[in-house]
Length: 286
Image (cartoon, rainbow, N blue to C red; front, side, top):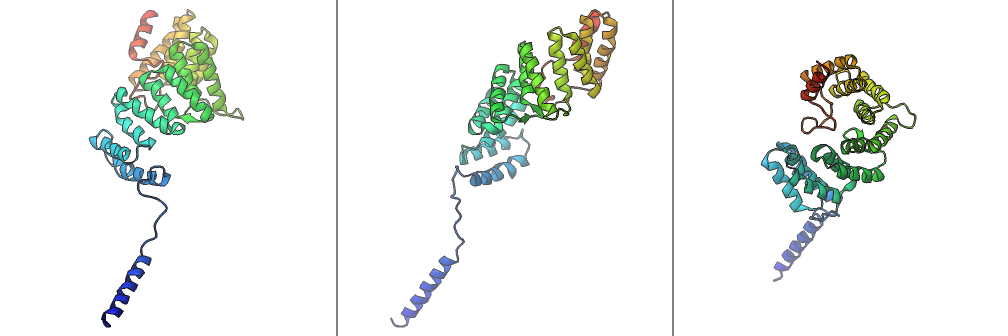
């Protein structure tokens, strides 16, 4: 027994030493979905090193998103990422509830994005206006898809036939783009839509000014050429309308479009096809 006692003390000392040499516990508890740091580790695992390494049209994309949601159901990005392939495939019935969940979890990040989808993809113009007016209160100088919130609000009012409200929205859009010093450049599609709105209000002189400014920035703009032609046609000047219709037709044949990021997936407000140009040319005897 006397010989075993020193051995016992040695083993006890080694055990205590081993405990002291174990890595210190972090403050991050496993499974703490309320922790931003823990959420970031899951996003890195399931999205950065998972979904983003496969095509978003692959079934694996959705599986990675589902795994992230199962691990932490309060990560807004998981729902937005799961909605992406559904949006591109036109399955809005499944995509929008996912976006609604993303907005509920992080309105600051996803509310404007949902408004953009409603405006351009699902054509829920009233819903888009509500979203953009709400996010404008959260982030007054925010942007979505390189445009002010007022730009999309104006586009929605245009499609709803609320031309005076659209006029007000695009005026605000231009003020925001010019900035405090008043020197900022106006986006050519803002000029397009401001011109279309003015034409719908039968304010042909300002409509022509806006559309000509648009063409100065982007001479091959099909819609700007087309709607400028319509103003001359409305004023009984078909000879002046014809060159712009011909320019619109050449531009469309040449592949020119509105130059918006999502133009391949959805039609933008007031967007035209060759059919509209051909019909307009027939009306002036072209």
